[in-house]
Length: 444
Ligand code: H79
Image (cartoon, rainbow, N blue to C red; front, side):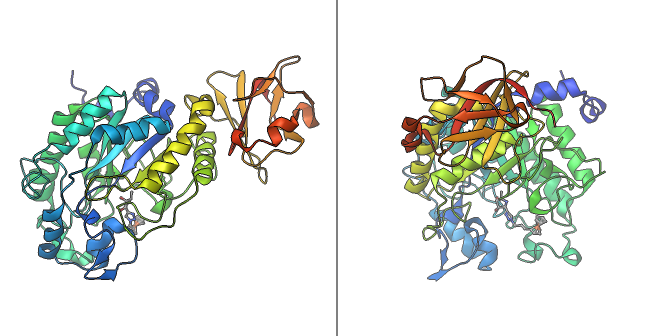
């Protein structure tokens, strides 16, 4: 049954909560940036090109016709969709967002309104997105699509003022034709062919894209698929890389999109921090600036404690392989999640999810009686969780360790915990130590 525009724009809080439920509970997803930019992989004409790899067309000012050569060479012979999904699943991720089309305009599926796609242009016979959808369904992982509004390839979109993508005077007079005859048909194909759980827009900052475009596209998509979740970049409210909407504006979009940053405080508006493991989204062969698994696990904890989701990126090679460094880190996250995921999934934020200066984060189960104090450094002999007050006589446990721990009421009736030597001397419990407490949050 189709929703009216009115019903979509004035959705009740209850309906919104129901629609967002799986996404809020999921907490952890995989972002995949994959396209022709993985062919040069950061090197064009023998030159190392600075900056994020999927922007190489812009950064190296590669003409469309020359970039098309890379697109023709895109040949993912080693792509194994199920392997990708397993890597995500084993890391503890619940959903995947893949670039159906990035700024370069190249589509990963066989679009009926375009020849600039994997099938027609790169002669890939397989339906890459169908394979991923099938594998995701099989392993109970949700699949969503990134889609760039900005398009450096389509003549009615950005091409005339590419690479000066942000220059107002050069607005493309035919932009609405691109929207009506190309972008919307493409989005319709994506929704009808692959039934995505999320649409993740980007490139919305170009001068042609307006609030009216945003509202129109959002309502049109939700009429097609009422339970679709759509990020805030469908509209024009996003404020820089911090990714939340401008205060006071009425914008469409279901969640904010901080990019490469974790918000300092919790917000009313749902948010998802998208972040890379090295310094690029699309594959760059010479980028070895990898964050440690410890940092990535700490980020997951930090984000979950602040009520957000973590969308962690991989950039597969043009052959279709997720870089080994990424696979190794995701495996380590999975090991940690296997023991500790109850402190992440389906949790809610506390009034005080952290205290300035403490290497501790807090989460809680829905309801108000089970809490997690998560220590982000090797524990000493005692730990003080000032925000948690255990019930009299209750057990406090370290996830992954069988024995209940000794504790007493500390400052302000908070929790003062004793750490057994066995725990302190064994780094295997880290790199984030999760203590489970039956009790309540200390009011302050
Ligand atoms: O897909 C990945 C990147 O290719 C894309 N978004 C992630 C998810 C992206 N990252 N950085 N950029 C795009 C650069 C865009 C920078 C800016 Fe702006 C656009 C600066 C000015 C316009 C966005 C809007 C930041 C400030 C305003």
